[in-house]
Amino acid sequence: MSAHLLPVAESETATAGSPQKRARLRLWLLLMFAPIACVTSLLIGPRESLSMLDSALILWSGFANPAAADVTLLDILLNVRLPRTVVGFLVGGAISASGVALQAIARNPLVAPDIAGMSSGASCGAALALSTVGVPVQATAFVFGIAAAAATYFLGRVRRKLSTVGLVLSGVIVGSIFTALLSVLQAFTDPLSLQSIVLWTMGNLHHASWQGARSLVFPLIASFLLLWHVRWRLNVLALGDEEALAVGIDPGRNKIWVLVAAVLAASSAVAVAGVIALIGLIVPHTVRLWLGADHQRLVPGSMLAGGSFLVLVDALARSCARVELPIGIFTTLVGGPMLLFFLRAGKLRQRED
Image (tube, rainbow, N blue to C red):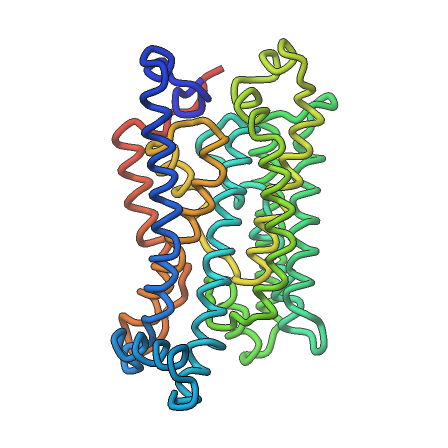
C-alpha cells in the first residue's frame, strides 16, 4: 500500500511526538490562513471595479461610521462579494473533504468525487432543470448527484462487499452514462439555455447568494460531523479490510457511512457551484504531504485548505480579465501541473495488489 495513505509513518513512530507537534502547528497555520484568504477574496473584485484599498476603506467606514458610508458600494461588498466568498469557501472545503474520505475507503490516491459519477450526475440534473421552466436547479442537481453516487455504490459491490476496483470502474461507467445523457440534453436545448448549461458545467460562483450559502451549511456540517466521528476508523480503513476486521471494525458498514458523508458534501457543492475539477484530488494530496496521513488532522486540514484555495482562485478568475472566466478552468490550469508534479515526483503511488 502507498505510504501516503498510511495513518502513521515510520518516522513519526521513531521520533515519538515531534512530527505530530509540527503537524498540529501546520494545522493551526491553515486555520489562521483561512480568514486571510477570505478577506483577500472579499476585497478583490472585477478588473475595472473597486480597488482592494477602496474596498477596505468602504468596509471600514461601514463599520466605523455607517451614516457616512456609501450604501450602494457597501451593499455590493456585503451582499454580492461576501456571499460569494462564503459559498466558495464552503464548496472548496466540501469537495476536498469528500476527496479525503473517498481516497481512504478506496485505498487509492487517484480517487476523487468525480470518480463516483457525482459530478456527471449533478451536471445532467442541472442541465435538465436549466432546460425546463420552473424546475429548481440546485435541488435537481443534488438529487441526480445522489442518484449517480448510489448507482456507483451498488454496481461497485462484488459479492456484497465494496470492491475498490469495482467502485472505480462503476464510477467511470455511471459518469459516462450521465455525460452521454447531458450531451443528448444539450443537443435538444435552445441556444439560450445551452449557454447557461455550458457555463454551469464549467463551474462558477457568479450566481452565489446567501440562499446558496444556507443550502450548503447543513449538508456540510452533517458531513463533517460524520467524518469527524469516524476519523480514527478512516486510518484503519486505509490499511485494508483485513486489518479493520482484526481490530473489530466492520469495514462494510463504516465504508457506507463514509461514502454517505462524501456524497452529501460533494453533491451539495456541485449543486451550488457546478463542476469544479481537480480540487478533490489535488488538495488532499497537498495537505497529506504537509500534515501527514492521520485523518484526525487530514480531514479538517483539507477542508481549510480547499476552501482557502477556491476563494483565492475565484478572486483570480474574476479579476484577471475583462470577462469573468469560469472558475473550473482555473482549478484545472492550476491543479493539472500540480498533479503532474506529484506524479513525476513519485507522490501518487497506488497500492499494488
